[in-house]
Length: 89
Image (cartoon, rainbow, N blue to C red; front, side):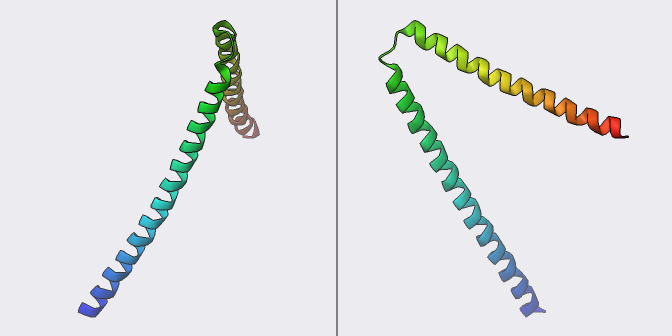
């Protein structure tokens, strides 16, 4: 009985170590992606330094409107998908 429990505990520990390693790898990947984003934003910020403040504000507003439009399209797509399910029934 003791050897069975020992084997079960060892297996459980092995699985936890494996999960911990996977989480560590995932965290490292997320950290790397975040670092790349930060560097990208830094580069963009440096490029914008030479432009007039008003032009930068207009450009930011334009980009924000593109992002909102994309989000709205995704909302509509969700409703269309739900409608298709309803129509098929």
